[in-house]
Amino acid sequence: MAYKRIAVVPGDGIGVDVTAEAVKVMHACGDVTGRKLELKHYDYGAEKYLATGISMPPGGYDDLASYDAIFMGAFGDPRVPDMRHAADILLGTRFVLDLYVNYRPIVLFHERLCPLKAIKAGDIDIAIFRENTEGLYVGMGGNFKKNTPDEIAIQEDINTRKGVQRIIEYAFDFAVKNGRKKVCMSDKSNVLSYGHDLWQRVFKEVGAKYPQIQTSHMYVDALSMQLIKDPKAFDVIVTCNMFGDIITDIGAQLQGGLGMAASANIHPGGAAMFEPVHGSAPKYAGKDVANPFGAILTTQLMYEHLEMKDEARLLENAVKMAIRENQTTHDLGGSLGTKAVGDYVARAIRSSR
Image 1: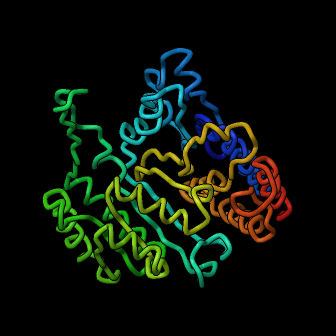
Image 2: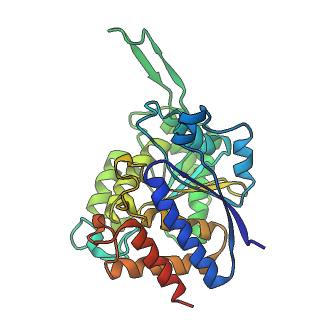
Image 3: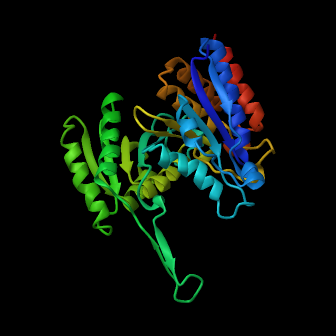
């Protein structure tokens, strides 16, 4: 009997390529620990949408929510200019399943991957929590006099007390459970004086309940600068949807680029969806050049969420070995293709038996 049930949605472009390597690694971990995952693959993506007009079938979200976890690749295809299918599948899953926690760890495994000088492996270990269901991403707004010289475009930034409070509380709870010492909240309340004043007030209220955690605040422009100037100063960061999207890309570059970036989308006690941060990069699809580490490290986050600690440890150690031995794709200075990197990580896991 399978230990856990996982829905796998490779998506578009290089999402298909890197998901195949993540699945390869899942099988290797199962071979070592004996805890096998039951994987069911779904063909949701641009190909299906173009062929049928269906992005997510009726009942699709409920079906995905019935699994112990959802693993998604990447979405985006130039043949669908408005990316309707991507919005329905990826953002739709986040919103419909209320996956309000977006967790993106920024961890440096080797100094050569970091573009900053005098930074060593272990110097950067930041947990970034992004509110995932509100803000500018909810799609509220409209156009008046569209396609005329007098056009007006309005995009609403939605912040609710419930939404702000629960993501800030999650960040503090994570800090306590994982021995973290500091939580920094980032906003732009000096300009966004209504929505982000709410973030200010809630952060102060919640922070007061965690006297053992050092709290701080930075405007997002200052935070972006300080992430590059002194990333070692940060521990846990919590912020809104838009700013979280931006600063985690800065963080990804500090750890070796988007090809290294993993993420989790979680509703505590409910559904969870895991995806690498990078996009679908259609021009590289099927060429065996995409870096699979982001997808593989996303698998590690999935294992941690499922409390499969042995598998998470095996996987992380294998990735560190691959980087240390330069068994990587070209973007990290290696000479291997996507499949060969996945093969190396899988072999390293199995050799640990």
